[in-house]
Image (cartoon, rainbow, N blue to C red; front, side):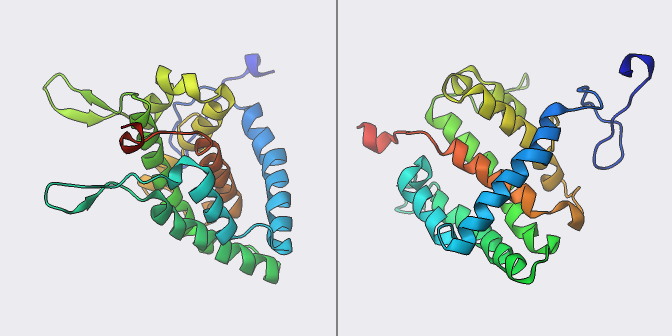
Length: 227
């Protein structure tokens, strides 16, 4: 049927999209109709039973993911530099659990309550991806023809061969679906304020938490530990 008609796709701002994946995206259909429902079932039951909470998630990230490692250092001016990722991730996750518990108690869904959580975690995920790339020796900066330095974009970070050698193909596909024009394009939509209130949902935040857990599922060594 699709061979008999001309099709156009549009982005969130009603502009013609460069995404040429076609009208029917089986990956998106599966995520929206099956994966999100399953994740919500697990998380909601976990929260109600007390087995999943902000504290339990932070404890797991701190002790069982590379995010809990100390990436800070003291510079020549005796000042602390670098990132404490647990501190940077905590506000977003805490905001999510506060709003989710309210929604469960009131049997309601308030998109406004997820704005801070999603905006923060989307941008922090890019920082985590750059930190991960740097730690494995993948390129994060490129030199332009005029000699200036420029950060490599999200798409190119995910296409780096060193990164793809460590992260499974399914995870790469999931990250691209969430953060690039291949799917939800969260990085662009959040950074450029293209989302309206209705776009902020608990489902989006759940997918971000899954991405956070998947990227954190590796063992990285800081320079201090290598020496």
